[in-house]
Length: 446
Image (cartoon, rainbow, N blue to C red; front, top):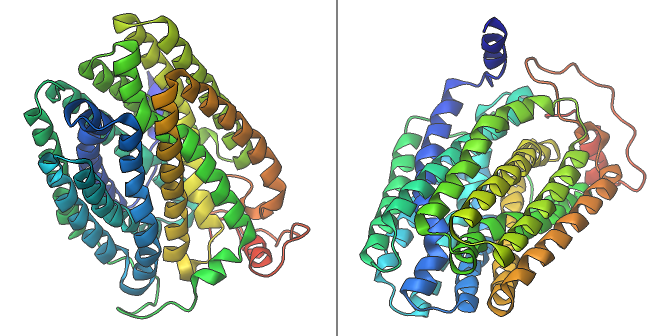
């Protein structure tokens, strides 16, 4: 028992109180998202009669709009601070999702999801920038890991509640879901009032940052890393959130309650393993971790393919729940690497813009994934999972090849618990020039 207690204490991420407050807001917000997002395409297709192909395009509209607002959101973070930008984004999304029960035609859904995307595009760079500003550099990988825990816990609990409420035979149940989601955005906005503005050290209110997006795009290792992230989002996260629920219901006979339980199991796996995995990855090579994630996700999608072809009902629910535990382990690997790597590759003066482009990489994944996946699912449901598995394996190989092009200071997850000792500047990777070489000279966590 003493050893167990010591192990539990060792998992304490040792983060500032303000970070815990921010994470509490994310928990409330993602509870609302979990209530709605697993059932959005079910609502559009099974309740409103919109085809799966068009429903996939509607889902992609959110990401297209996010591209437009993401760049603006990043600039606003650098100018007015992440808290103000995040608050505005939350209010926009609250209004958009609260109006979803009014949809009667496809263009209504396109318009509302575009509005929600405008808020979402500014949400991620502002939220990630605020988290970075509130966290000591040597604890950031733990902060991003904890963020993945709280957001997934909220999403999983929301998915369970949504599954208990939603019924494709009763459209009014979806009205409850959307109103609860809208309220969750307002709760997060209220929690932000307890946090500082999160501007860069020495930056006055309204002061412009001394850089442009062109400066960020000249950082070639950063751009290459984001390109890899686009692939993993499109063939990993998108199939899970957009297509897995409707595939499970229509092809494997899993009920809405069963879908909610599967997402809860996925969430509990993340909650229980994300922080230990982040701790275990300290001192390990990040790109090898992402390669392992790609292989694991490919195996999960092959299991989903087999289940859709051979099982139904309770048996399918049990096997898919087990598969989602394995998928969750991959999500934990991604959560411990992606956010901290973006910070380590960035210029602190332009953090908002770096985070905006990181967010845009997710948005691009959520454009390509739903737009292509919706048509594949409509034409041949089983083919979607074979394609996703093959592309996950391609992403794993890409991650291994990409490592040598990244600055050596970002190769390894820093060891937490204390600030890392200063390291001598590494030799720039052959072929790095300009901004990329400057990144290579910056110590990990700078």
